[in-house]
Each structure stands twice: as structure tokens, then as C-alpha cells.
Image (cartoon, rainbow, N blue to C red; front, side, top):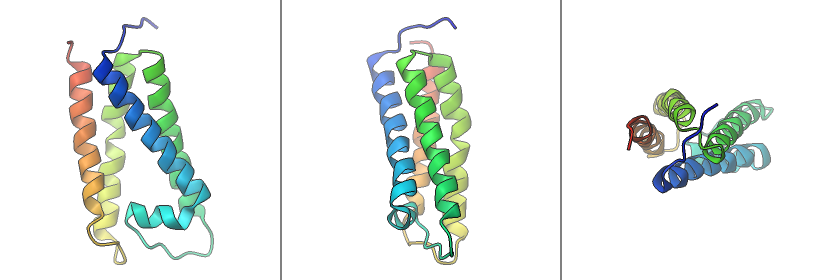
Length: 127
């Protein structure tokens, strides 16, 4: 795949998004109850299946974004961020519709989606 050097701002943003998602994923796998409160839910269940599903999803996404940033793959990074913005939108809707949601936590998901759209716009735009 042909690579073009990512500008510094894109590398910083790519690493930020990637490492943040790696952290969130690991947190869901290692400290599931604390992570679910940070996510905005109080999800009382006999197993940690939800936490492990969410954890591996976020860990994989973070690994993908970090890898694309390391490889200087601008268009794949832009596409992954744009398509991946569906995740925080759905997460926000889940939190908004959950009867036992932690009040005020839905905004972080919406803000993440908006930040993803802005980041992908500038990645697609040739600078």
C-alpha cells in the first residue's frame, strides 16, 4: 500500500484516539464494573459478557487506529475513523435509552462521534 507521511496533527490525533480506545478496552477487560460506570451504564448481570464484548471491540478498534497511524496510512485511517464513528453514536443512543444510565454520561459518546467526523474530514481533505 502506498503511504504518505501523516502530518504531525494527524499522528497526534491518530495516536490519541487509538491509545484512548486501547485504554478503554483494557479497562473493560480488567476492571469491568468501573468501566461500565464510566461508559454510562449500571448493567447488573451475572456474568461480564457485555464488558468483554465491549472491551475487545474497543481494544481492536484502538489497535487498528494505532496501526494505521504507525503505518502512515492516511486514507485507511480516515475511513476507519469515519465508519467507526457509528460506534459512539450507537453507544450514546444506548445510554440515552437505558433506564439505569448514569446521568450526564451520554455527552462523551456524542462528542466522540463529532470529533471522529471532524478528524476524518481533515484526513480525507488533502493538506
